[in-house]
Image (tube, rainbow, N blue to C red; front, side):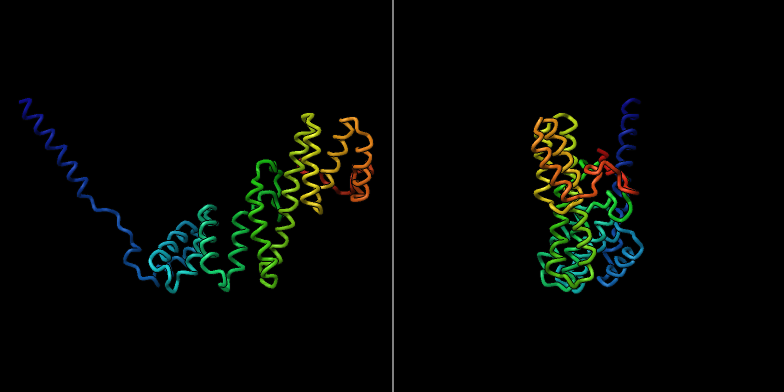
Length: 266
């Protein structure tokens, strides 16, 4: 009886395994679509903001016929949809591929602008979405890559419709990078590392001469020289601060009317 029971149990297990293997596999509905159909569905996904599907369909379209009628548009749309879907690495890879393959494409200015946007971080509020994030959490390398891409748009394609916005974002990036250095300088100052604070402030002044954050860099330098008992250097720095920012509250001792504290709140 035991052998019979064991045999029946094994037979039941084999039947279950066989049944599982017999289940129909999920098919890819796009496999039977024509390229025109796939392109239409990809465009619909793009128009509807279904970014994951949009990127998937355009990738499939490019893979089917990399040198065909839809290939170039598919490549740039993969980059855009991946970026909107939060897949920055995939987006950057796709736009780089487009730039390398089609350097003379009519939309090459847009490709560089899109590359700049992929690396651009607007969480710090260029267009009114400022929410007080700590600049030390941002990625200066990504901001520099964004700046370089926007610079290509401004320098090589100044008449493109993307140039004015690219120029504005470049100005923001310069101050963001300067602010990153100033934030580091303030970090060192608050911990009593005055020489390190001076070095970081000087780096900001040297690399980002016209950035508004330079006002704070000079102030940190002045305070650090005072802490190091270097009154002459502190006075020299204050004269530079007064000459460059005559209305600075660090010089006048009075806050500007309607002025708000900087995000790092010295």
